[in-house]
Length: 204
Image (tube, rainbow, N blue to C red; front, side):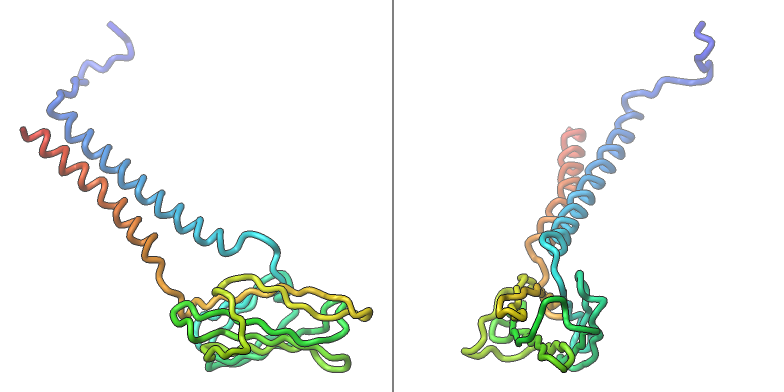
């Protein structure tokens, strides 16, 4: 007799094992669907934050909240509300002698409106930034899609270009990602359809 065997242990019959197999398979399928959805969210977020280093990233949470992130964000102080904000930099960024630059991004839910930015610096004055949201697009504007990086060009003491990268995200008006949501819902249905098919096959 095997000294490690348990005399009180009984073998599990095929009829008793079948429900356990169903539960195990259901759990595995559900976990797989959850992992796929988490991966989709992570990829979507990664596409937003990865890539080249951006000097200043502006994110509109709502009509009264504008967040500044990015490599140079700590040097800026922002104030404002009602879709209009101003910001001041603690000092001009290195190499700049002066200039004014503009950028605009199309509203995610309305292509006739833009989020517009103006950054300027002149010797003897503070370096400033002005942002206006939900502004009607004009023939003078050349907006890019929401979240697209834009390189602003200023001048150095020799008249050469000095670049400063900015990016704007309008999370207050972001259109839901219907494709990803539908895909996750479809994946969630797979375990249920499989179980229904399995039960039908067993009942025959």
